[in-house]
Length: 479
Image 1 (cartoon, helix red, strand yellow):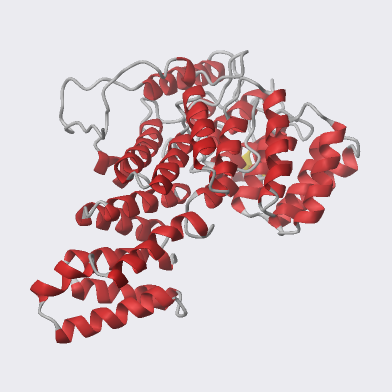
Image 2 (cartoon, helix red, strand yellow; image 1 turned 90 degrees about the vertical axis):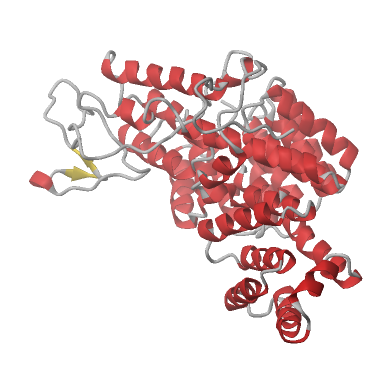
């Protein structure tokens, strides 16, 4: 089911994601160059929503900061701004934003949404529920508030209340896949696999452009024991992410940076003290016709990639979803999808894929996945432990010992790494290389350890799986 193509295939065609990304890039470029709307708060808001929908949180935060400097009272991307701060764990900035919103309008649902999000980020879930409830009373039609309300219940293992909140969000936005996705994730968390599969499949069919739906379907298949299907969905999630980043145009930032308009480099403001005219990292412009027009940046500044369609049609379905049912060939091989990923957000997906490959006894593919996880998150002890275990099973006992040591260096009290290190050291001295690994995977103790490593991606929110990605997806906009 996992189709691959050769790198130099002359008959490769562009996927729908690339075609949509090119269309959106052309639209942003036209708005900036022809209509001179590069600093419009509405355009920046759509750029922020687009970046957040592609799970590029740092670029989304950069756009939200630019919106705040242009129009502090713009509410188009308000929920995206709050959710981005939650996803990046920026408590202090979220605290300041919540205070500013409450002082500006105490009856604004967004203000109390920000307050509840701050307490959610501080793990004060009782206070978060109280303020999310207040935001839903102030604006019952806000699906973002209902989803956040449901997340605060889900993290406290109150499944019934969480599902009720997600159903309320679905009634507000019946054409969106996000409430369906959250309900599927909640059923998956409570191990109701049949209902989880129904809602996750519905969410994926509603918006096939969202790679998170594919990741959750992969976790669902992993729970069911279908490792081949799980690997297919994990690879598809990574392919959607990789194809979205391979836009024909450089980025949305390029469009916003043309003809004297703002250019946001690498997801951050470029700071320059030239002429002593700096305001929040944006250099002032000599254009007297527009008080918000900015100086054209240097041509040496390479814009970053902010891709994937997040704009919605009147039916509240993403534009990409309307053409995703077309059948086209894959543009990237499976290994290319893994190696091109540079975002830590997708490290759990690669980790899950590696576990699926390990269960399928595809040791070399699992090692590639775990090595990529180690490069994306060097401080993650679980990735080094899984890499060592895969090397152990493949016969590379020296490499396994090194990886177990590295895992223990990051987490000294890890019982799995300690036990497997003792086994590897004993086997390196006692047993011949030809007989150890032939019986290791089939032994009762190895099967127990195998299940321990495999369950870590599903139960520990710090190692990957549903809970971690759900937290990263917290408060996603439905605009």
